[in-house]
Length: 186
Image (cartoon, rainbow, N blue to C red; front, side, top):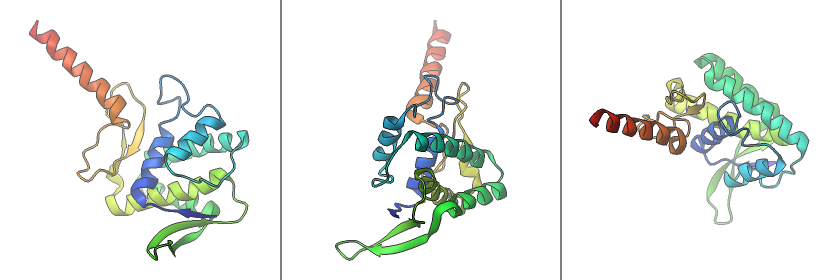
């Protein structure tokens, strides 16, 4: 399959998003409990629009999620090795293809018959390798929220991201800090 590759930021971001769907991170349980949730996850990120989804795919994507977490928690050399293994699963290499307007776009290509999880591994692994090479290993981080076990790749320009899900973890910390300041004033 020929999969449009929107760059390492999108790939590393999707890897971060996938890892943080885990019940280990989310207090409300698994954010990918069924094939419909997996379909929404992939569709929202523009990933693998042509692939068929099944319950077996869901189990494989859950296993991939755990592998990506290990990569994000690994030292630099181990992260590079493991992300490279993800790409090698079904990847036949990146390619440039022209769109209808003649502009060049990157695609990652996968072997015929590759599973959904292996195709996803190629895209996410490519994103992680790109982030590692471009931004450095210090951008693979644990969430700074005291009650969160999330991990992420900071692809922000400034490199100051602190939370795996800023809208959730960052907001919780801000609210807690605000309440603590108000208690000190009274």
